[in-house]
Amino acid sequence: MNLLGRHHPIVFANETHGFVLGGTTVDENANNDFFMYDEAINEWVDLTFTSSGFPGTPRSFGYGVVRNQALSSKAYLGFGASATGENLNDFWEFDMETHEWTQLASLPGLGRRHPSMVPVYLKDSDAWEIHVGLGDGYDADNQFSNFNDYWVYDVTTDMWTEVPNFPSSKRHHPFFFGIGPTSYVGLGHSDGREPYIERDFFSYDTKNNEWRQEPDFASYLLLESQERALVTTKARVAGTEFSIDLPLVGANSSELRGSIGFILSGDGDDHGSMSQGEFHAFYPEDAPSIADTSASPSRNVGGEAWRRQLPPHPGGSRWAPGSFVMRGTASVYFCCGYDRATGILHDDVWMMDLSLLFVKSSSENDSITDEADTGEGNESDDSTTSNASDIDSNNGNGNYFDNAMGNELQNGAASSSRPSLTLCHFVIGFFMVATMLHDFWQW
Image: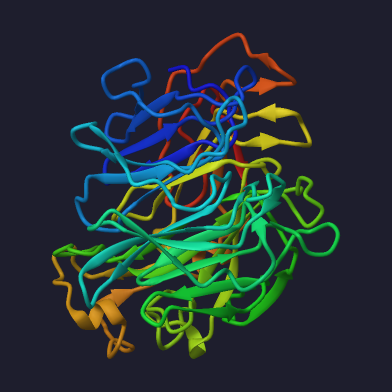
C-alpha cells in the first residue's frame, strides 16, 4: 500500500471504510491519489487508477465531509488548490457504496484553499446543509487574501446561499465541526495582529441565521475530584478536527450517546510546531455530552461550553494532518501531516477509541427516543454509565502507544521499506494501524 507521506489530504469515512484523497507529497504539489481503508480486514486499497478514481482536478488544501446519518452513502468534497496554484470552487459528491462521482453546483463565491466545511442537520425540516466559508485565495482585485464569507449548501436542491459573514477577522485554516444544526468555527490564521494566530471561536445558528461568540480557546484537565485545572490558552492553526454526535440521525439504536467536537494537532500561536500533538474536546453549551462523571453524566456540567485536554498523539505536533471517524462509533483515525521540527512528511495512521467520553447504554438495543436526542429528562437515567474521568486518571498508568513509525519521508528521502498493515487493539490511546515495530509508549 503506497500511502505516500502527505499534508492537506481530504479525508472522510462511513461506518466501515475510510478514504484519503489528494494532498501534497514530496513530489507533487497536488494530486488525485485515492485510497480506501477497510476496517474489518485492516487493509488499504489504492483506487487511484480504477473506475473509482477521482475525475476532478488533482488538488491539495481541500476538504470532505459526510452526513452524520446512519447508512448515508454520500460524501461531499471540493475546494483547495491545483498543482498550478489555481484556487478551486468546485464541489463533488462521492457515493461510498457504488463509488460513483457526481459534480455538484460550484460555490458562487471565490475559489479558496483550506476553508471550513461543516455538515449540519435541521431536525424540524429533516434536511441537511453543508456550511462552507473562510479560507484564502485571490480576491476580486486579484490580491491574495484571507476570506470571512460564509455559505450554505442545500443538499436537496443543490443550491448555495450566502449568509452573514463570519463575525471576526478574515482567516484560513481554522478549526471547525458540526453538532446538530450548529456549525462551530474558530482559531486559525487571520489578518489580525502579529503573528495572526487566533483563539476566538464562534457558532452559526442555522435556524436563526445568526452568529454567536463561544468562549475563547482554553482547555482544562478534568481531575479525579471533578474539578478542572487550566492547561492551555494557546492559539492554534492548521490541525485537524472532527465531531462525534451520537446517536446518528436515523439510527434505531446506539451503544453510545453524546455530542462532542474535537481539535487535534496543528501549529501553535507562532505558527510553529508544538512539542506535543495536543488533543482537546469541546463540550457545547447544554449538549447531552459527557463532561463530568458527577450526578448528571448525560449532560454538560452547568450547561456552559468548555474544552477538555485529552492525551496527545505520539510525537510532536503536525501541520495539516487528516482524521476521520468510523461513523456511529467513537473510533477515530489520524494520519499524515508534516512535522516541522523533524522535517518528516508522515504517511502513518493511528487510531484512538474515545468510547469512554460518551454515555454507554446498558444495551445496544436500547431504543432511541426524542428524549435521548435532546438529553432532556435523563439526568438520573440508570441505564447509562460513564467512565469519562478514566482518560485523565489513567494517564501514565497502563495506556500505551504503538511506537512504529511506518514508512515516512524525511527531508525528501523515502525510507527503503514499506510495512505491512497490522492492527493492535487498546481501549483508549492512539495506536498505529500501519506498523512494523512493537515497542510501546506509555502515557
